[in-house]
Length: 138
Image 1 (tube, one colour):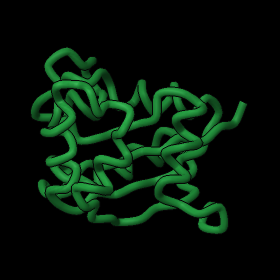
Image 2 (cartoon, rainbow, N blue to C red):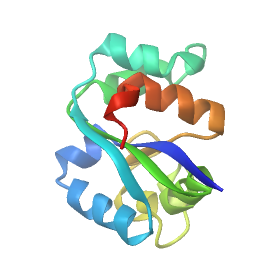
Image 3 (cartoon, rainbow, N blue to C red):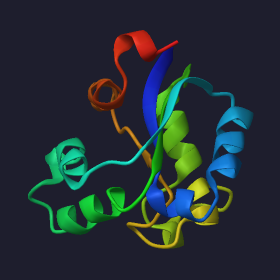
């Protein structure tokens, strides 16, 4: 089943000039990029986006990271896009990620792990809508 997911190239990866390599891996893995934008989230934007984690101990540092510089947000489409993107990214902790995954290759720590991805269809719908109006999706 074809579905969509949100992908973010986080500020830590953009800062290290890894965006092109990550986008190339996305395309090489069979995803269609249906929308893409360079954004600079404010602290408030990041807090809104990650509101589901508000009570977690990492919320403050996560929202600080995500508002620290430009990020690239994308709506990706593919069969089983959510699972496929999460597999390509690898687990959150780059030290525990499988070889060949984006986080293993480009991540520096649990927070500075280069990428973000939706974890379920309802999350993907919310997250895509957070950054893109329907008319912007191809």
